[in-house]
Picture 1 (cartoon, one colour):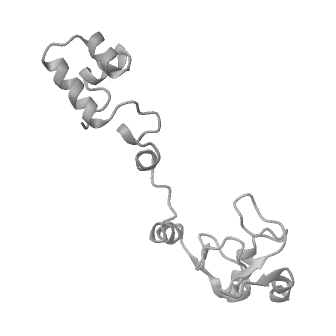
Picture 2 (cartoon, rainbow, N blue to C red; picture 1 turned 90 degrees about the horizontal axis):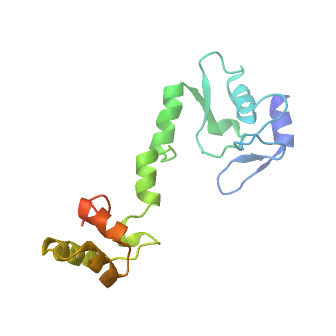
Picture 3 (cartoon, rainbow, N blue to C red; picture 1 turned 45 degrees about the vertical axis):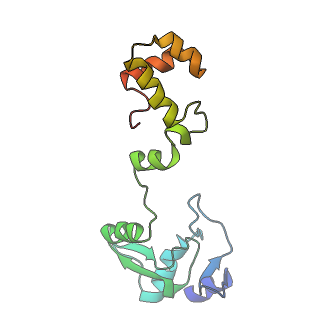
Length: 157
């Protein structure tokens, strides 16, 4: 009966074997049947019982709205977290995200200087040229020159 309920409310996806839920979904994209999560119902069809305490229903296919009983399995929270890591779906962490999404130096869209110009600025400063003169020559503010001199920006050049 539950199997028929899922079949009537989903359609097969021929390329992956998934059964895609046609009804409402949660904000996270999971099938929401009104009787519970669709993948939990699919697990019940597969195993004959609802997931017990401590059992996490995981998707083998990584398609959140899939309700194919062959595409779900039980496990622990640790298993689910390992699935996420194995499939590259985990949040990389703030620092790794920033490194990918926050270009530095001349790769930054607002950069006014190149690495070669920063080296020339450091060279001019080491020879005693005044920061205000260097700033005018390179078309940036004295504050920018000061930050370069202090090593607060363009640190890796």
